[in-house]
Image (cartoon, rainbow, N blue to C red; front, side, top):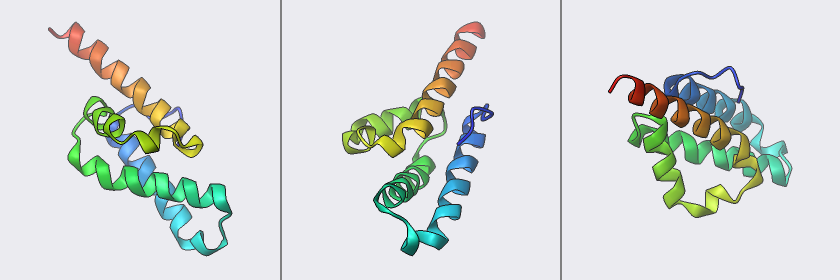
Length: 94
């Protein structure tokens, strides 16, 4: 996950990319690596139900277990920044 992600679409691609990098080596991952793999697997599955960062955050907030995992910190922090940008952009165009 990178701070260079500037749209929800890019965030979704980054989630898929991280998951696809971790999945092939899943048998060699330590506990934190498995947690990270599971976070990206969950995010990858849920992203199909959201069309924006704000919608995705709503889905994640309903799933409180994910919010407490340290490995979810970076992707969710990026998502918060995107949601803030979406909200600001929407307010400008109103």
